Length: 283
Image 1 (tube, helix red, strand yellow):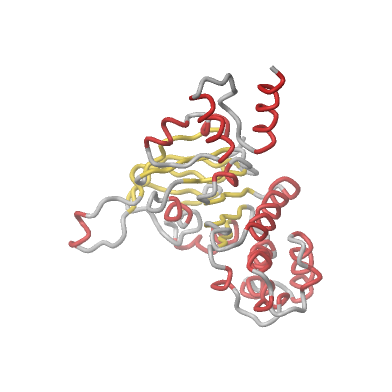
Image 2: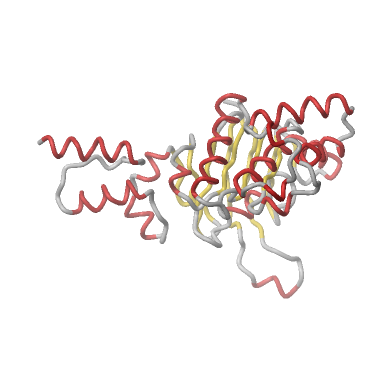
């Protein structure tokens, strides 16, 4: 499978001043490959470096040392910055920070207009993007009157309209209620599964991470664990050692296994948890 993003021995710390020379690296020797069409979740507690890593994928930050490549382009290449940001779209935590227009369809069109796309094509892209995130019927609404989940879906539509090959979402559900989180995550999964868009989801909700193809877990600027959701979340002891959470269903099964119940260690969600408990009850 082709690598779309390659992170090669990346170290990063803020600032270049003499005072910053003693500061710890926020990213401390990161190596990571993300394949085209993959859905990757990056998780870790606050300060782990996951959001800083996300901002390296479209050149908001550049490595202090090491390199990041996007579809073969080094993010340090100033002449290719436009190409990189066409390939990788970034959705931030607070949708209000991304709203720039008073009408939904105008807001979604904003990025396309900056790319110099012809008006007729912009209109088609905007409508297609709004359809993709389930917000077409709100195209004439004011974004300010939408719910948090709806605003975030409009922000995602604005990125989709620019037709990136990869979308990076930096904790897009952190400020949303459960319904809003569900709306956004359903949208993200649809974009990945149906449209083949590479998705990198930065999150601290482990129930979101289990939906990914692969989970990358960071702690103190290092990748401490990487693999499928089952491979990662089955290592409960290691995660707890690093003060990291596991999905609630996984935690329940872990506690019951500690009490002597014969249960599988790879339970990730409520459905799997119910199935496992039913097997115990039948015995």
